Amino acid sequence: MTSTYPVWGWGRPEEAPATAELEALAPAAQALLGFPLQAPERPAPPPDLPAPRLQAPAALDPIAACEPLDRARHALGRSYRDLLRGLRGRIDHPPDLVLRPRTEAEVTRVLDWCAGAGVAVVPFGGGTSVVGGVEPAVGDGFPGVVSLDLGALAGVAELDRVSRAALVLAGTTGPALEAALKPHGLTLRFYPQSFERSTVGGWLATRAAGHFSTRATHVDDLVESIRMVTPAGVWASRRLPGSGAGPSPDRLALGSEGILGVVTEAWLRVRPRPAWRAAATVAFATFEAGTAAVRGLLHAGIEPATCRLVDAAEAALTGTLATGEAPLVLGFESAGPPLDAELAAALQACVDAGGRVLDEGAARDAGAGWRASFLQAPYLRERLVLLGVLAETFETAVTWERLASLVARVRQATTAALAAVCGAGTVTCRLTHAYPDGAAPYFTVLAPARRGAELEQWAEVKAAAAEAVLAAGGTITHHHAVGRDHRPWYDRQRPAPFAAALRAAKAAVDPAGVLNPGVLLDAAR
Ligand SMILES: Cc1cc2nc3c(=O)[nH]c(=O)nc-3n(C[C@H](O)[C@H](O)[C@H](O)COP(=O)(O)OP(=O)(O)OC[C@H]3O[C@@H](n4cnc5c(N)ncnc54)[C@H](O)[C@@H]3O)c2cc1C
Figure 1 (cartoon, protein in one colour):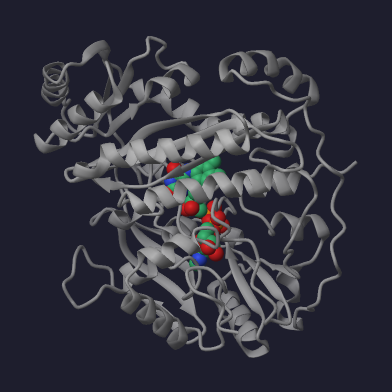
Figure 2 (figure 1 turned 120 degrees about the vertical axis):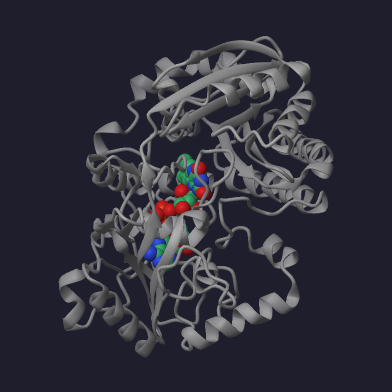
């Protein structure tokens, strides 16, 4: 049977989890999670899709595909909902065609055809959206929908060593970008957890955040200029280190999630690769004590590259610390002189705030182990889902004075929803990013799912969590984007005049309303 792993899985085809491997994993996972797991689920056979409603014009034929598994792969992102539906062969909204432009001219040709024929077009980078951003759920107002896969528009086109910037094509994945920069001793130093599969265009379109906790957290901070093709023409900003010339064209393109145009390339700020790294872990009696310590660090002007505070339950589950304390994982790195003084000052501040230093040491690759387990998480998640675990994450950000009440409220609401819907389950929290005025709490939900009812179960839990986030003053997303799934809460969060301005901007550059309908705004037809 043809494997459907590319439709729902994270790894290469040969990395699809085998039943024997899942059976071996189950006892330890069950002991750790504290609720019963189920027999490994066998993925459904490849889905039967309705025939494509569209045929590409001759000029686009060389870049068009309509093979069913390819269409199914482009029908889903990588949220829990996506993973489950992919596993079960449930492809609710397949694109009619997948188009893979190799040049910007071909992107323009695709948009010309789609705008003229009223065909919806969904830009697709790595397809790692966790918010329904790439699912062609565009409503009934279109004669068809294409998934515009930017994967062939990849590579580093130019390197400016004088200004330390690289011109990167939109479809470039994290590993491909770093591999191209490495021989030059340079790095973008941007590592979202989806690094392996996500693309530069996707990062820009979603305002992604990397794993570094402070300073340049979002990709926004690394952008010098963006080039985006819209149905109304090319939107290209000038390369500048900074500019006060009115509202920024880059800032409007950032986070536009494919509704204003297709990002084809961007100049990004690169830097020398770090030569020195050091890491330490400090244990706090409570998560609250740890948050006070993190706030103290930021207020003292100490900004560790890694500054992740993990609650005791998550620390135990991930094997980070099993003492019932909340560990703060600290990491410093430098491309110049060692930062021993900063590390010492951070540790002293943590001790003054009641922390207990667990280990400490300068090591050239201290962060490597942590990074490897961080990047393994998507592989573990799909294995847990196959064993019947409802496994999902969500994140927000809030100012310090409201952080404790937000975390308490979200924990309480989500745990209550899990108890009602799943009968058990855990909600854990870590701080992933820290700012002088607040932080980004990131929640992980693990619960026993009821086979066949998972989508309804997750919808209830997600709604309870999102309501609590909004009521406690947080944002519906710190970096996972809005897509289609976060619309109900995003619509309530944004100011009404801003929504009107965004609608007007879209109408100006996409008058036919064909670009990613339903994302950020309602479809205009
Ligand atoms: C396991 C896992 C871990 C994750 N970790 C992180 C994380 O650490 N930080 C983080 O920020 N996010 C994370 N995400 C979410 C996701 O990876 C990000 O949103 C990422 O930026 C998406 O990139 P992509 O190339 O996969 O884009 P896609 O998923 O293909 O697309 C995302 C959105 O951008 C649009 N888009 C894509 N390319 C273009 C383009 N060239 N022009 C215009 N629009 C475009 C799409 O239409 C869609 O709306 C994670 C997701 C998973 C599954």
